[in-house]
Length: 46
Image (cartoon, rainbow, N blue to C red; front, side, top):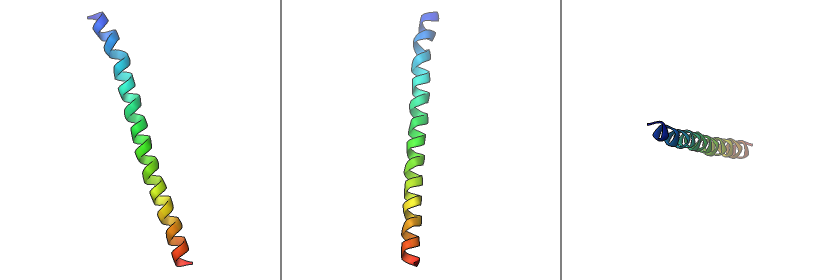
């Protein structure tokens, strides 16, 4: 049982890190799109 726990531990942490990085990547994509939309609106209105 102890071996199984020590084996699943790192994998669990790694999965959490990957999911956090994925969320950050999605957030960056949304931010970039929002930023580009703001720039476009500024150019269009000016």
